Length: 365
Ligand code: ADP
Ligand code: MG
Image (cartoon, rainbow, N blue to C red; front, side, top):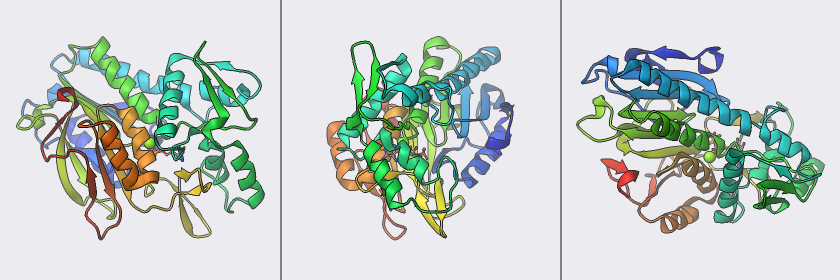
């Protein structure tokens, strides 16, 4: 599927419909956008691009009358996702993040604007969640086999070593000169919980900034981190994009309902997509830095907010901090954020903040 594709491709509305079905089946989205089978203004308004990036599937869907302009805007958005991946990847030795990991314990390392903003977002997540969200979880991620498969649980010695290098307090962001310094050797930053959302913001903002006339509506989705603008023709009776809500506890396409998302973003954190199996047991890819173990929450957390980076940070943080942190979030960002927590298949989801069946328009707030 997406991961196997060497090249991106432009797909038609029919194919997009099919592709979204496949992506949904792969568990790529719990929330997904599905255009109506027939666009009111015809297929020709829509351009859809699907490609692998940041270890997951991405899609860019744009609507506009001027095909060449639309293609340029989509290419710019795609380039933006690839650019952020090359900065924030923890898998590539040559990424800016890997360079920080390699040297910041020896000397302060100067970083570019994007990595700086991502680190600041990480620091916000850490302080807001009182240490549950922690970009220094890299060592734990490695230890539990998320970077290189292993079949055994970490030993107490390994967990002790992870404890030594985990904790944002060991990281200093030096405002003066935009430098990063580690107070401890072995700190392993991992931006997996926020880089996809940040990249989606960069892509959408670049379309709006550099190609403002190309698309009257659009959506960028990286592994379920979605941000959209405008209203597509197939959603013309209601404003924004229709986002369907999948049941996280049931395989396939069980849809709980839908809502309209306009000029806003949505992200979901759950363990049903990314996990490792050791000794026949599944372990989540989200770690609780306080216990140094994978979180044991079978449900999922969805956050709707004006920006995708914020959604990404908050959905991971609230996955760990659940109801208490969800309440704190809606108090901190009044009228701007909605949090949906699915605790178990037997319970209705908990909803925090404003949630209407209809329009969610961050531009109006
Ligand atoms: P996904 O990457 O599946 O969209 P998330 O946004 O919730 O899911 O991010 C999970 C990723 O964040 C993990 O794969 C790991 O790289 C990193 N991570 C794990 N635990 C934490 C944590 N406590 N705080 C910040 N990042 C974490
Ligand atoms: Mg996240």
